[in-house]
Amino acid sequence: HYSYLGYNHRNAGKWELSIENFLHALQLKEDVNLYNALGNAYLKLNQLDLAVEAYLSAIQLEPTLPGLHFNLGNIYSIQQQYQLAITSYLKVLAIEPNLATYSHLGDVFVKLEEPEKALHYYQMALKLNPNSPIVHNNLANFYKQQTEFGKSLEHYLIALTQIPNSAEILSNIGSLFFQQGNYSQALQYYHQAIQYLSTTDIQTYLESAQLYEKLGHFTEALQQYHFIFYLKLRPEIL
Image 1 (cartoon, one colour):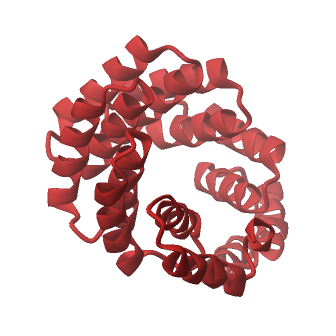
Image 2 (cartoon, rainbow, N blue to C red):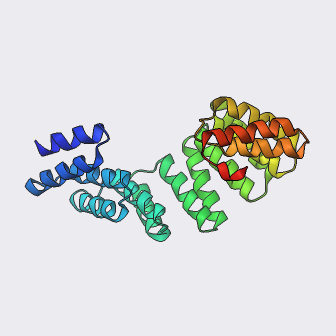
């Protein structure tokens, strides 16, 4: 009964009530799926230490389930406990190599400023799925950070062929040209990105406005700034 209520509340986004019922259910009987669901609910409420406890309890019951170690690694990464995240992700790979875990390991090593290891894991992800737009986008971001702009653009364009209406990839290409001082090319990609961009993400609008200013198109720049102000997300830029 409690587990049923817990899952129902979870599906309705009522995280506090789902946690309450999961805890009641676990008092009656320990269950790996309930602990995992409990950890996910704690994560939704940003109660990360409690999420870790829940995932560790699940792992004690079923230590060979890769998803549990993956979830735990994600929490450690959020907490910037990168060595613990690496340990968890490597446990996943020992059980079941997969693209997401290789990609997450690459991300962790980027944050640790270990580019050779980051590149290794991104390339391992690419071997599993050479057409993955996510992996190509990650590699492009990596090469951009390393200022290898040619390689970065190559991977962005491959990713774009897979998801041509991706605001993220289009704006990333715009940012790449912006970083190189090629403002006209950057504007072209920003304009394409804006067509698909959620209004809750204003970074592309902001950079587009800055580009208009650099090109002397002040009316267009003001229109972009005023749109951002209208969204009431970043009024301090005006």
